[in-house]
Length: 245
Image (cartoon, rainbow, N blue to C red; front, side):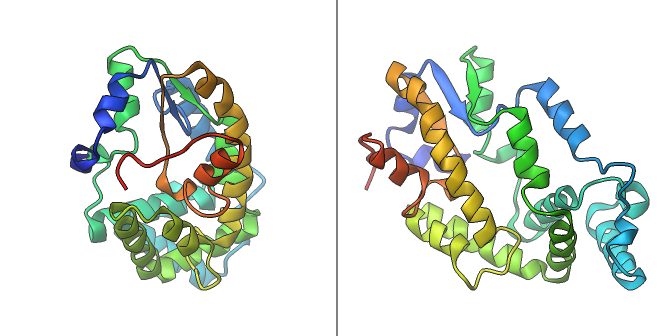
């Protein structure tokens, strides 16, 4: 969060807002409960049907080592959920990621404490789709195995994206994700989903922008590139400029 202090005018802009717009309102506890339920596999689906015995044991041991929980406790969770849990833990270990000091939900948390309304651009159903169902199930299974086999790829990409963000290179972040040589869990197919969602977000942002005084806080991975949210806002006729070139 200390990085926010280095962004000129960030708090000045925030002090003038009467609403905060984010990807998904994380302070909506009923929605969070719905997401946790959506992370569960249907009773008819078993992870053992998608891995051979050696792969299943490898995943089990890796999860136990990294998360402290094995598949005896986690086998009812969707692979996409397990992948995200695993990625978070390796980022904590290798990149010193601290959820309690992340800027991702900082402004949303401040808004909640100061009674400023927070609105999500995605509803619960869309968020569940993005988290757990945007990829076919067998892809999710392959991706979980790949992330556990090659965690260094995930760490390398995350490290590169963070460095680009700190230098304000938003377009480079988009190219990093959509590039053909990207073999991580967030790659070209995900970028195509982001592009489609950006188009919807521009439409949903319209009433907030028309009304004014909206502070919009989103993951930088959605912003840059020829089809990023900033470009699509410009194409829709909005004037978009950086607070500090």
